[in-house]
Image (tube, rainbow, N blue to C red; front, top):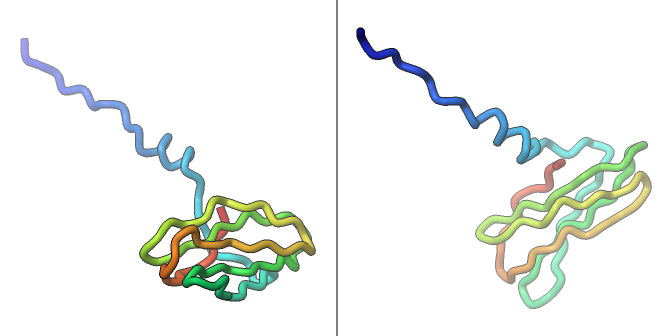
Length: 93
């Protein structure tokens, strides 16, 4: 008798679901870049949408922010925890 090949279970789909999808910020969210001093950068976000948005600040050459829930009509700051990083973008999470 010959051997039979069996495919290993795929873990890619499960991993992608647990991470969550990042997407573009809707046009009803206003994003402004600002300096906090000492080289720290922040994104000021204002949610002008009709529902809560989950937003994350992405920085070049440093750590990204955690995912923040910003209620409709409210503002928040997504700040770098390291000085001298570069701005990249804000995404939904």
